[in-house]
Image 1 (spheres, one colour):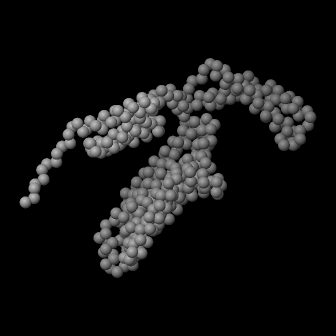
Image 2: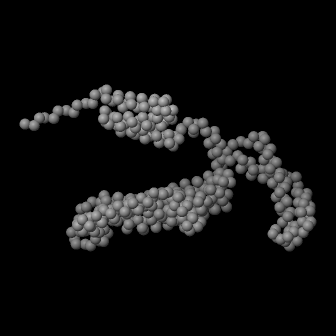
Image 3: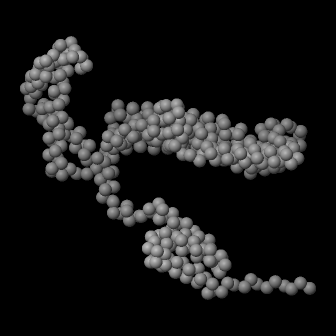
Length: 404
């Protein structure tokens, strides 16, 4: 008669202390004896304690290894929440601007005075050139500078004190605005908003075509990455057929990995170098990356279908193409639609920064405005993008509820 199996013996309490002692001892030794950074020392000590706990207290192994990974990654990424606290005043100035000191205001007023005089001088030169029938690139007479100076004095004399002060005040306001910085208040002029909307629509166009090209290519290719669909398309049972299906699925999935292995930003850099500046480079960058993402998602969805429906279509004697069309695709159609719309939303956001490398879209404007410290314009562009993305999100949700 077989001996009955008794209850599992509990692990002695003292065994749980071994990994903790290893963790503490290694941390101290690495920090003191080897003068190692505390975060790195704890990460190495936690990894060592995790290995030891496999033999002494297996339940501690996974938590200790997770602690090692988190500590190492925090050290490697320079994770420091206190940095946010220390830089809170700088962040506030960056977002909302700052007040100018008296000295800075004096420099702004002086700069405004010089800017206004240069503006009058430029206007005087243009008038003199028009009178002489010349352009700026033509050879000028010897007394041109003297004429321009006299005309500038005439223009200055023609202005009343109030008119001159208004010009200087406008120049001073612009200069002070640039020095104060900040993202608020937003830029609300009609001309600027129309320009931003036009660039945002170009961004949406890039996302539409990048997603569409990826979808059209990914759907049929994903059939070659799924074991389930390959078994339907190639019904041979010989070793050669089985090996061919495995190799085909492996190579196709590695192709998807290659396409999505690089960020759209990196791909945009490559395509801009190959075909030049413009939105078409952005379309290709999004299409390649999205092809890799959708291809994997579609293939994984096909591998999870119910075999009963497939067997029912096969039993009717239908060819492989009909089995795919009526037994496979209808089951994954909701996933295909929802994931494609999700990638479209993501591509709109991604396309908004491709302009930073010359791949079209509103990113070019964002880059130009940031470099010229026009933060209010950047805030307006960001708000427009958020509104557009929200509208797209509502539209995609409606499509999913209506047709899926």
